Image (cartoon, rainbow, N blue to C red; front, top):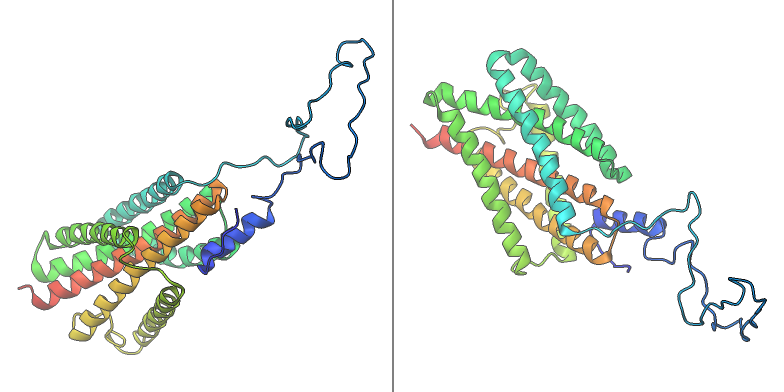
Amino acid sequence: MRMSTSNPATKRVLQQAGQQGYGQPGPGHQQGYGQPGYGQPYPQQGYGHPGYGYQQGYGQPYPQQVHPGMPQAEAPMTIDDVVVRTGMTLGSVVLFAAINYFVFLTNPGLALGLTLVGALAGLVLGLVISFKQVTNPVAILAYGALEGLLVGGLSAILALTLEANMGAGAGGTLITQAVLGTIVVFAVMLALYKFRIIKVTDGFMKTVMYATLGAGALMLLNFLFAFFVPGGLGLREPSMLGLVVGLVFVVIAALTLAIEFRGIEEGVQAGIPHRYAWQFAFGLTISLIWLYIEILRLLWIVKMMFDD
C-alpha cells in the first residue's frame, strides 16, 4: 500500500521503503496459469511414476521457491513497535541523565565536559540518523545516551542554581515538576490529536516547521551573544522576555509532537517494515527531550522571578 504524505520525515521513510520493494510483488512472485499468454493448459504426462501423474491445479497458488540471498518480507510496523522502541530510547536518555546529574554533584568539571560531549556528539549523530534514515537500534540508543548526558547536565545546572537562591530541595522539586509537566503535555497533545481537535494539515506542519527553525535561530544567536554580553540577548534569563520566550518555545515543542503522531499513523497505515519504528522512536525522543528542557527552563525562570 502506498500513501501520500507531506510530512518530510515520513515521506523519506515511505520512499526508502518503496525503493526496497515493500508493497510490490516479491522476487518469488510468478504469473498464475490462465493469465494472458498461456492460452492452453499443459497436457498431463501420466508416466505412471510417482510424481509424474500429479498436475498442479489451475487457480491454486504456485509454490514459491526461496533462494539463498532472497530478501524476505518484513512484518509491518505497528503502534506497539513504536511504543516499545520509544520506551527503550527514553530509558537510555533517563539512565545517562541520572548518571551525569550525580556526577555533577561530586565532580562538576567532569560533568560539564560530559554535558558538552553529549550536546555536540548528540547533534552530529542526530543529523546522521535523520538524513540517512538510520534504523540501527545501536545508533539510536547511543543518541539517547548522548542526549541523556546533555539533559542531566542542564538539569543539574538549573537545579543547583535554584538551590543557591532558594535553599536545599528546590532543585529536586524543579526536576520533578518538569518531568510531570512533560508527561502531562504529551498526554494532552496525544488526546488532542486522537480526537482530531488538532488537525495536522499541510499548513499546520509548515507553520510548526518554520517556528521550530526560528526558535533554533534565536537560541543560536543568544548563545553567540553570550560570549560578549552576560546572558546574551536575555532570551533564557529570569525576566519577562525570558518568560515569554519560554512559553512560546514550550508551545512549539508541544506542537511538534502532533506532527510525530501523524507520521506514525501514516507509517502504520502504509504498512512500512517494522524496523522503521526506530526512526519514529527517534523523532518522538527528540520532541520529548526538547519539551522537557523548555518546561524545565520555564519553571526555573518562574521560580527565580516570583518565588521568595
